[in-house]
Length: 210
Image 1: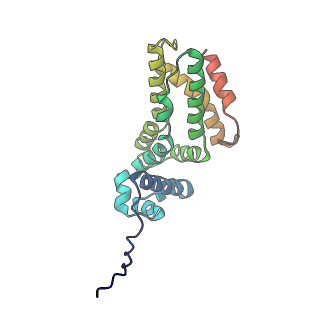
Image 2: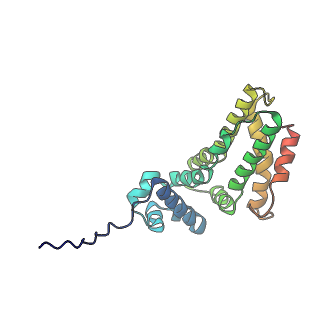
Image 3: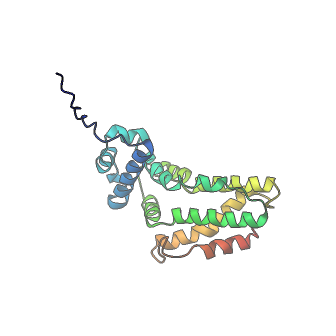
């Protein structure tokens, strides 16, 4: 008589990680290397070893060290787009939403890690101009572009009165981020979230009558 006892299933091992999780692991490994050991130490091999992944996995997300910088910064700003999907019904709501958006941006770009990367990149680096361009496209320029688009949408609906949404976005981010970034970078202020950025955000919006 055949044995009816069910045979134990063989373990198939751990399920594969999603692309988002892999991307986060690679970005985290690159961040630790560049902040802990410097730009030169952030090789593709070192990132793969630090992340515990194959080198070909690293190359899925970045072709070289310059693009790894973009991956790091993009990993910090990837949470921003949903905030810009909110639409205000009137100027008062627009001001409240804008305050939330600006606090979120500041909380990303004024952290210890973000300022630490800024310090690394302002020094002499191989391909410095290319690295800074990639840093900008994935960081503050990305934030500025999304903010300008949000302001333009609300101007077109008559919610906000702005002569130039692009210039307004530049002025707002300069007032909210630029000086705190300088102070944190030279060590006379603490990075986020050690202090409340909201009063500065409100003051900037008041100056621009938003």
